[in-house]
Image (cartoon, rainbow, N blue to C red; front, top):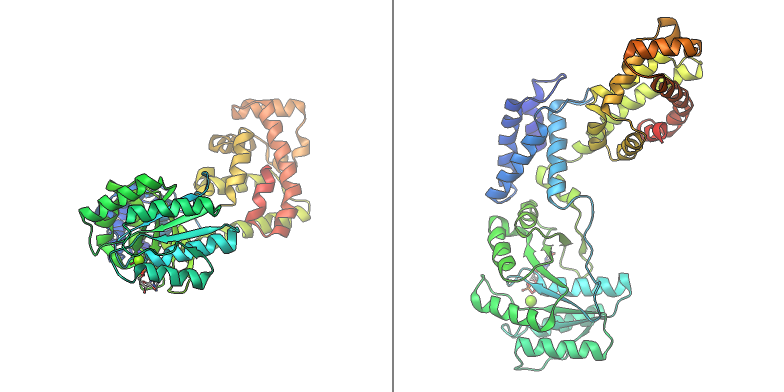
Length: 442
Ligand code: GDP
Ligand code: MG
């Protein structure tokens, strides 16, 4: 898998320091191959690699993990970001009812099935009153298919009038939805085996009479490289608002997801995960990122490794605390550890829990420079003072401030921090290490 390969590339560099450009580029060659194997479109893969290279070069390597593991983490984070971040994108239903959701896509992509799945979700999970209408007059059984799915899910469908054209059906659907006080009207449109003008014209005509709030492009995730062309053609013609990726239960390698998002710039809102009508879920970028990298749980591993080191250190310090021995030397080692780990920014990027701690530090005027200042202050103390900060009287504080090029105020801040850390240290141990760090600065 890609994670194995990346780890391999970096294995001979085991050790510390910053990630250098040549090694990162070598690793990126592996990433490129993996992306293409996962069916990510070439231009998308390229721009992805540029972004990751920029982020990785020069980054400090965590003491607790290998460079390879760290690169995997960076690649993963960028994948997740490109797939839409941590957030799932819900349907936008914020319009005057009936809110119109229009499903578009190629034939066989899963439009009709997804229409029924989403209608069912709206009804069962959100207590909405949906109505479904099929505008697919090309295939004889298409409207009948939606009707059957409606019966299976208990969602109303617009009665079929044989011979009516799509735009007329759409108008009739809007009228019916208004009369029946429907919340959401789902329009299942016709698809073709390939993108063609007639299909696009019909789609635009339907959109103009129904002014949909959501236009969802339904794409088969097995489409691979071709997914980009499909997405491009549709998004050139109609204002898409989101994507539904179907057949994520198959052997899809997730590449279509990345390409989709990059080409349309629209969030992937749902993933279809089977033929059954409840086989649909909100799209989770993190899961698909892991799938593309085939990395299993290496990200979790890196997070755990980082946390373990923190915990070890916290435990050691807590031990000293309990013995009444957490002194300035310990504080200094703690501060240095933070710097080594790439400063506050790196920490925050690596571990979700650290974001809060960093915000707290930033709002109390603490940044990476402050770490250096604090270190200097401790350096200006005598060995005895470091072991017993109570010895620092007003006169000594002045000297220490002068010696470290800081102010008495900053010296006092450090002393207060030391006191609070001591108190928090006991708690941290109880809380299991890293998570407790936030409490230090809160
Ligand atoms: P349409 O032509 O775009 O309306 O496509 P359909 O909704 O009729 O789906 C075509 C086929 O794909 C049907 O047999 C569906 O059961 C199947 N299908 C749709 N979505 C999924 C999915 O997420 N997973 C799997 N395994 N099959 C799906
Ligand atoms: Mg259909």
